[in-house]
Image 1 (tube, rainbow, N blue to C red):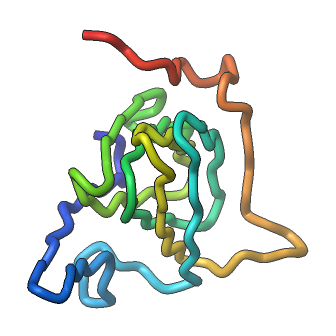
Image 2: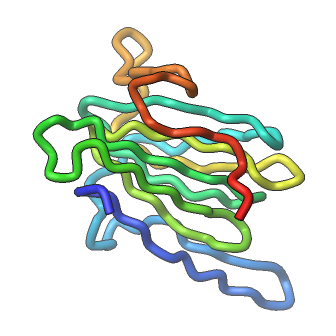
Length: 151
């Protein structure tokens, strides 16, 4: 596992009215601070990658559909520099993924319908000087292929 990455299973609590799922609590051991909450959707087969932050931590969960989340440690001073982690998260595997600054991340919608991801970053988005650094999904800097791997 890339240093600083946390992956926490999320518990669904169903009853006759529907479902409840806690994603992140301020008393969770890995909670840092609250910046904002936002949701993003992904159409089937779409890759949203790569990006990283210099200050911000991300905490995200896929609450509808399924995604393949991929992380790449680009921190040269990290003991896990160059490592890649994959997580298959969503309705069939509800998890919270926590990503420290300097770790590139992105995801691909792998469900047959749109996926919905909730992100709870530690910082609010700064429109004047965003802490949002991007690379193309197919960059040569990250040794990863987003194609489906047949077993």
